[in-house]
Image (cartoon, rainbow, N blue to C red; front, side, top):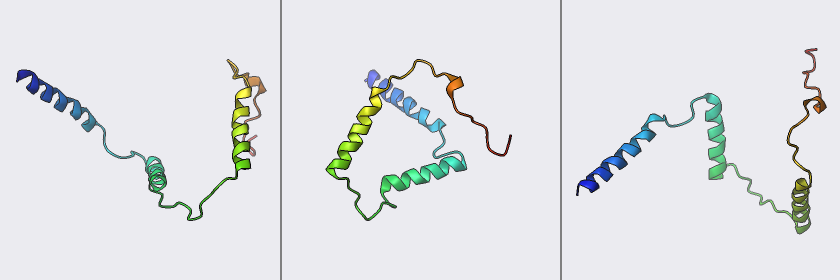
Length: 91
C-alpha cells in the first residue's frame, strides 16, 4: 500500500515539470511559423486539385535522389573555395 502511494506521488511530481514551460510560441516570428504549420496540419489551405506524378516522373525523382549519394561527403570544407558573400551595393 505504501509503495502505491509513493508511486502516485512520484508520478504527480513528474507531471509538474511540464508546468515550467509556458504554452505557445514566445515571439511573433514563432507565432507566424506555428500558424503556418497548423494550416498545413489541418489541410485548410490545401489545393482542391489533386497533384499527381507520372511513373516516369517518379522514376526520375528517385534516380536523382539515388545519385545524390554518389558524391563523398568531405571531412572538412575548404573555406577558400567558397563563393563571394559580399552584399551588392555595400562594397
